[in-house]
Each structure stands twice: as C-alpha cells, then as structure tokens.
Amino acid sequence: MVSAMNRSILDAVMNAEGIVEPSKMAAFFHTNLKEIASLSGLPYSTLSRAERYSTIKAQQQLRNCTEVINRILPWTGNEFHAYAWYRSEGLPEFGGLTAEQLVKHDRMDALRAYLNHTSEGGYA
Image 1 (cartoon, rainbow, N blue to C red):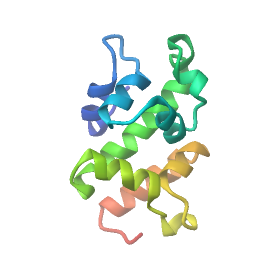
Image 2 (cartoon, one colour; image 1 turned 180 degrees about the horizontal axis):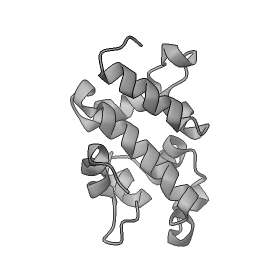
Image 3 (cartoon, one colour; image 1 turned 60 degrees about the vertical axis):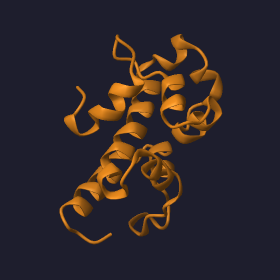
Image 4 (spheres, rainbow, N blue to C red; image 1 turned 90 degrees about the vertical axis):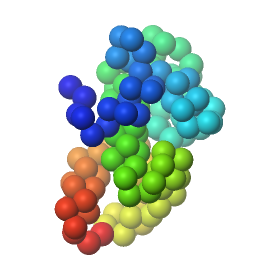
C-alpha cells in the first residue's frame, strides 16, 4: 500500500500497473538511468530491463527513494532541492551518512523514525 505522503512523486514515476519506472524517475528529476542507479543503490542493468526493475526488491528500493524525497519536499521547497538533500546532506543522527546511504544500506526504518521525529519538532 502506498501512503498518501509519497503519492505525488510516485504518481509521476509509476506506470498504469503501479510499477515505478526508472526512466520516468530519470525524466522527473532531469537526470539519467545511471544516476537513478546510483541514487537507489540498484545496478544499472536492473534498471534497464522491465522484468528486472519490476521485482519486489527493486520496486521497494525505488519506492524508498521517492518516499524520502517526497517526505522532505515541504522542508526543501521543490523536488530538485529535495533530491539534492537526499543525495548530499549528512545526517548527524547517523554519523554524517546521507539519506541515500541509509536507503542503500536497508536502514529505511531508522530513516523514517528520524524524519518523523524531525517533522514533529525534534532536533536532528
């Protein structure tokens, strides 16, 4: 189930069957598939073939990226600043790791908890 908080970006990057398409992500963020591979931690070869990027694991990884970027959108002002934050902002709570690094290392639950805490007025 897709939460309401990350619908807008997901709507832009999903096909009619509800599959996140890496090429749509690349177009949305004005980048290329190699950058989406780097962003998500998935191999380029996975993103270049529908039967590979349609797997549960690949879809979860792509959805995690869009969830975090969409989640911080109100804080950054637009999707391009949110994209840059996701890729480059070191988070003190995690020893300076970025959200991108946390997603790549399957630490999405910890990242969600951090974002929830921060959005409720907690300190980073």
